[in-house]
Image (cartoon, rainbow, N blue to C red; front, side, top):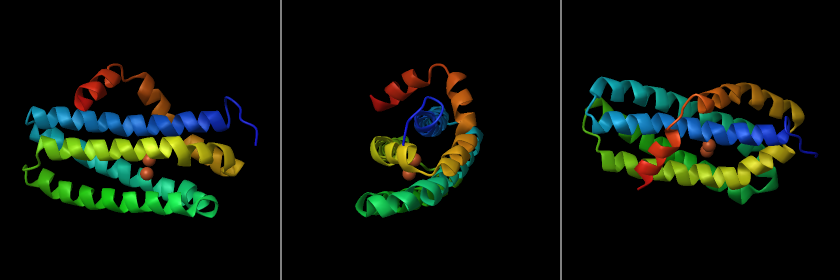
Length: 166
Ligand SMILES: [Fe+2]
Ligand SMILES: [Fe+2]
């Protein structure tokens, strides 16, 4: 399958950008936790939980399902990581609700999410951008289009990500 700037390469960039958008929400959440801004934490958590839940469902339906036929071990590993992420989301939701979630626990979750995103960027997303059916690629491009505009309008995100990684 040929790659073009507006085709498979464009889809890959949008998929990676969606990871960066989710990471950006989490950076804001960490800032709010650090400032003990409880209402902001609650709103950002709800936003993040909704978006990452939708994100994983989209991956499972349109990418991992297809990857399963090509690389069942990788597909199985990603589904296992999604299950673990969902478990942690449920645990952290309780902590956010009770205002007792620690920054260290959230930072550890950020690292887990980044490792998972890096794994997808390096394999599943590469596969998706080259081998998904054209109509599925087009659907995903439309769903993810908003992420690109978010990235362009979020200066400073990189610096904040570096600060959290430190
Ligand atoms: Fe995922
Ligand atoms: Fe992902």
